[in-house]
Image (cartoon, rainbow, N blue to C red; front, top):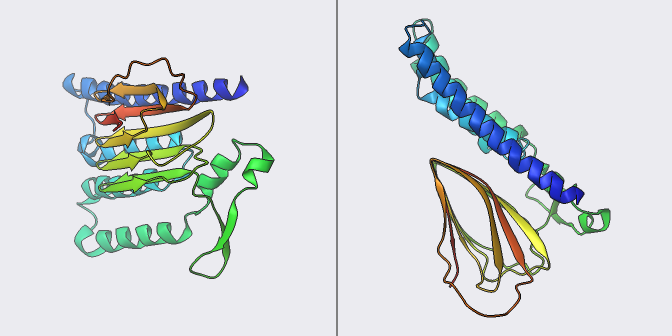
Length: 255
């Protein structure tokens, strides 16, 4: 019961943040239309990237780098608009942006996503991670039972073969992701958290799975294209697809 309540609170929090961002944008536009003087850079297109980055970061507790990358890029172009009269961004701004992105890639934690998922399960399950060497020769925890797909200004095609699938997260921002789960297996119920903002996610599932939709669609949608199968078979495997589709879409199919 506690886990169910936690999922409900997380999903509700996503709706609140999405609604708050839309209200803030609408309020700023309203103020401008009434002649209230505001700096021009407030309405620069790059601020959309900052808002999306903040939303993704807060929603996922900044476990993946998608939110921070969008904040850095959006912040750069907003600063360029605000300080172009004082700073030559052609000579200084672009090199600084490249340096900041490089530092972010070097110092960002690699195992935050795994820790986030690890805390959701019992200790004996969390200890099932296998330690494998990385390129630096040190050991890191890795588990292919979790799906972590981040797509920003790009796309990916992924297939999951785990027979102990525990769900995961899909982030598609100005990009797309195709995930094939037809070879995956699990017992009971798992959760797939999808964030589609100006992008989309296609999820292919076996026909024998039951899929529950808990996606909040704002100027977007969820399209379940699975064929209707009339039989009395009870579906014991439940995939819960939750998250948000903001100017984006989630497509569910089975073959």
